[in-house]
Image 1 (cartoon, rainbow, N blue to C red):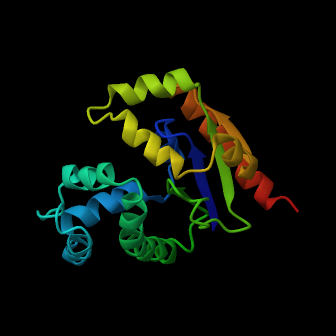
Image 2: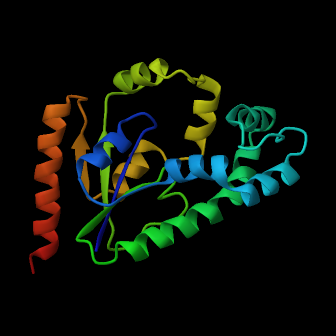
Length: 195
């Protein structure tokens, strides 16, 4: 099984590009959203840690944002509670797909949390900063301060690129990107299978 992870800036299109590979796909963001909706154990741990803020189940994202706004370092504390739950789901996903040729990993802090293995394939998604900012501002929940906080927990784009084996330029044209991903997928499989 080849583990492929797409890395890049927040809002660079990692989820969209990951899905174009048409392979078993793991999204850490989806798992976190499911945790907040369905997992009482996670809710109780967060409530115990932040009793002044976390009051409703399913977990209200606005309450979590207030926790982060109150103190920059609370993001790390939330992560310490949430990550073990996500990691269990991740390990289960890998076990279920052990016989697949490739799996796609969409994990925002993949490199930062040292989840990468030596034989993983990392693709850096290169985008224009102006395009990324334009797309982020279109999101209903856009918050520049929070965006800066989230970015501060991530490696710089230069570091992410350094760790990557391939660079894919995203111009946000779906037809072009489908072709590029198809070619890159073939290249990865050929590179892996060649002696």
